[in-house]
Image (cartoon, rainbow, N blue to C red; front, side, top):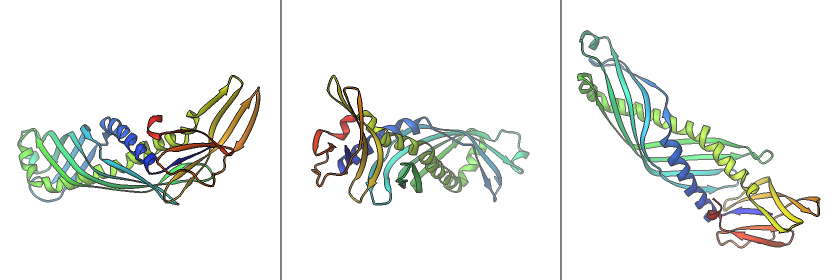
Amino acid sequence: MVLRFNDKGLHALADYTRLWMNYTIGEMSIDSYSHKIHKGIAAGDLNLQNISVSRFYPPLIRYRSSEYSLYMTTLGGQVELQAEWELESAFLSLFTFPFRGEVLGRIAGLQSEISVQINPSTNEFSIHHCTARFHDFRIRLSGSMAADILHWFRTILGKAMKRKVEETYCKMISEKLLPWLQYQITKFPGYLEINFGENIKLSQSLHSIAMTNSHIDLRMKNKFVTNGHLIETLSTLPSSIPNNGEIFYKFGKHFLRKIIFGYIF
């Protein structure tokens, strides 16, 4: 049995990834961050803590395959952040009012590319590179008179926060999305079990993954149980497979069944 992911299969995987991203990033928190302001009356350390995502709109996602990597590109989307800020400034510390409050941020226009490499001998996934850019980043501070002062430096602060969020995005991709993506693809064969009767059953496990510029093939290890006897075989690619966006199961010389990828999930 060989499962082939072509454009329609990868498109369905992208839609499923958007659902996962919507849930995961909506629950994500960002590490505390300290930014150094070098000039002006607000010179000092600006500390941001309790940074969280208040609202998230997932970007458009596209997967494409090559002979060496699986690429995921994103475009659009929006994130709204909230955090607590505190300013430690030698000059402003001469005043008696507190220098802390809340910061609200809105990030839009995410453009990213992630390259995933798959080890052919172990089927392990790894990130080859991740780039992320947000083209629109706006912040608003509130809480005290210092917030009005900090608004003078919001361009510098916005760029610093933007870089931090871009780094956090790639970290999330590596630590959360990659294990999830590997699990979805490598465990998918385990969902495929066909019963031909009371005493005949065909089940699958993943043997290897082969990639090309147009599709991804999951080559299966077939477990055929009949009357209590187990027969294990490795699948071979057929000479031709209909390329209409569906995934075909192949065992021996016969197609046993066909399914639409999007319906599996």
